[in-house]
Image 1 (cartoon, rainbow, N blue to C red):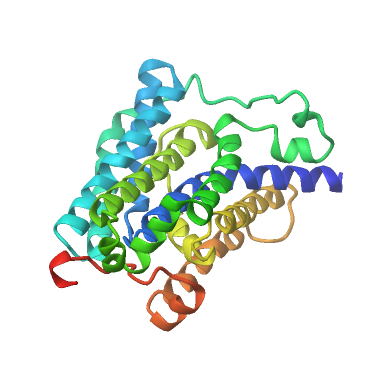
Image 2: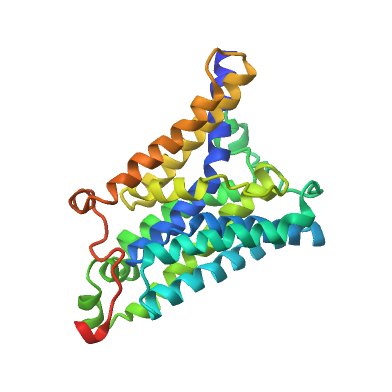
Length: 310
């Protein structure tokens, strides 16, 4: 029974951590280019509601995922225009994006509250891997979005650290003037990676409404966007570290439900509070520039770039 409990907690941790992982990976790509996006919460909410609406209307959850990805990218495009083209304050723009996304998702989703999703994404059975004792139930008895995330995090790590395009990405985030002088289009790069980050955040939101719940509830992201932002710092802007951190956060969430089911004398509210306490602690580090430099933050993070000033 103890082994079954551990396996169930670990399997649930991966499911609960998947939306965080998608959002954090998207934020890593944006911040690696030098753009801080605090609008992750809003992008996830818009992705969740748009994906759910399309999935209900068409009966195709994958079409909902694609719609959520496009909706998150459209939201991120607003942030890219304000911060890259208009050189607006990135913190203010991100916060405005979260407020806008929260209100827009509540407005669009109001008619869909209480409507069940008839065709959520189902678990995919991998013939050999799923049958491996212990490892199979934990890692390989999940839906396709979870399995895709297993490939996405290492792929982004390889892209960032082992390809020329990844080197250009890091250069844009560290010293955009130097990258520009070497022929890298800083503005196009920042636009592209911010929009990519929004698309991944949209998928993270869609995972909540199409798999994790599956239903639409107002403000259903419940702070996960802020946890994803903190997770980027915790992961030191490394996709593989973000993968581990997302599952740690998911494990805390899963443990609360499991302990409550076993009538253990630990308040589930206390366990659910821990990720948010950690988020507050990590975000406090943002105010300490020397700390960010020490843990490897991109040198130009949060700073607009003007070619005329280089």
